[in-house]
Image (cartoon, rainbow, N blue to C red; front, side, top):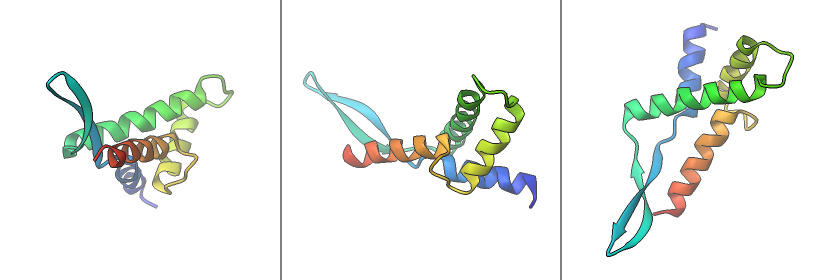
Length: 99
């Protein structure tokens, strides 16, 4: 397949749709679910992909390039072993409970 298409699909699958923000009323702070802007979605997805590759490559004999390629392919396939997909699911789960 086209490598650019694989990267775009990986970013789409790793980008969270909702996040939480801290709101305080009268000294009481609680979290509220909010939508994420498109640019922040892309930034978070790229950060999650690179963090996952860095964590895998830290004490591994594999070079960083291979770890990054594996993370991109796993994110493209929505593999639950992918760090980026796990972080996306975690953020959306927390936002769901904050509604």
